[in-house]
Image 1 (cartoon, helix red, strand yellow):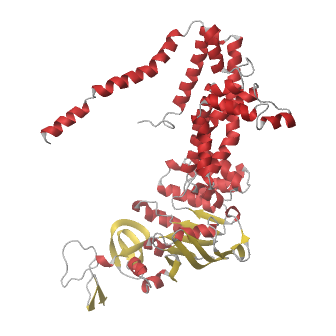
Image 2 (spheres, chains in turn brown, blue):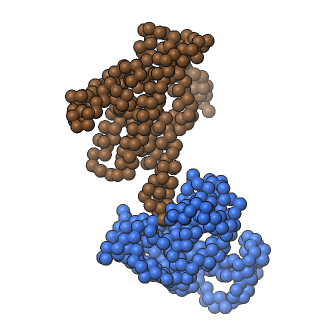
Image 3 (cartoon, chains in turn yellow, cyan):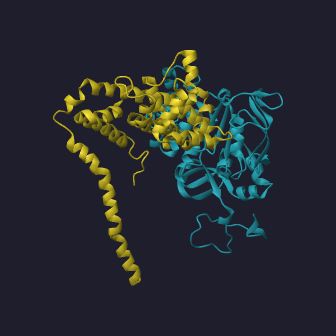
Length: 270
Length: 311
């Protein structure tokens, strides 16, 4: 080994200061706000804060809406994932891009778009109102719709990836054993993609639970009807800081739980 | 009971054009190099790949006929399929894998599990009923796959390279078991392999497939005696003798004894590769295990080989 190479090697094993400083700052930047939240949490009165009717109402509504959004996503998103993964058709890439658009779209824009489509005078909402007497804006169903709009892509993408990675010859094997299409789906395909499906559900649910922009734009901020936890946090910030912190803590714990559950599945571990 | 198939199909680079007839009770081995279309042919017989033209008739019933418009879907064909890497469902136990077909065909759970259990016992895996495929050895997985394919009492058994995924050490033993289980099956049997030893050891009749076409067919003895293509000549240029092993010594069925490289017991095939045969004027010293004295009446040089008429 030449002296120069040895020198370079020795230099490479030391962490350059130019890397360390901004990296450390980045870590602090991401972690300090969370520490701030924990530091200001009223641990003593946490139980009481969370038990107030307003907070409980927001908690209940958040559960209903986020689970409803997951339900809608499963019902519509899983078939869409099958279509994208299994059927070749012209414009498939365009459809996939469209599917993921609401992931990158500012949620407020999503809310406005939903209003223009499903509002009382909207493209589709007009007919829903006239024919079935259904109005979606400013209802719990509307909040579910808004959350599903932003959360469904997470489920579709994860499920499609699972379907693509799966060895389809397992389905052939099942067919040679006398299994029809539904039996194969139920007993072979879905169990084999269960990890991807599970990750998709968790991400979809976490995204729905935290949804703010589209919900407040499309469904408004009505306590007990559309005021989910993130909306309640925002409102409580001006009137009742303790309640806002308590609610934020709940959302933080849920996010961490999802992260831990998905460890190594969605986020590769080195 | 028999299989009659005329298969014409194009899949990517492969053009398959094959006439195949298998009598019941006969074990036909389809031998050919990689890419010859062996697996595709099996998949076509199973209905997993549609024919461009042709027909598949099993026991007088048309499963597929492109002219008559017949088509029986894979799940309704009375077949058993052992896939090359077995494809045991990883999320089900060995027992549930074997019971899968019975359940899919509508048998009650308890009855399906009972029959599956009986089959696992038959292949010597009663103690592994609850094991996931991941926990099974290659030989055990192969036996579960065989039980899974046979438990539904199929009329046609298709086996795609059933020994290829095994290491050499277990292959001999698993092959012996496979022979025994195949012998107990009374339907039509078709096995695919690229390994000539396996083909000759198992086949009643060989069908050699090259480039999507049948190049030769006959008993293993006929095919090895008169190879009709370079591929076959290369493959069967191995002298194979049936015999009884006792340790390293193998008593040949046709008389005589050879010394084998490894220890075995019971029915075996002894393979003598031409490259391993050498002629010496005097009694050789060193490594040869088998030494015979004789008179060469002619020596002929063919490429890198020497043909000799010994005795």
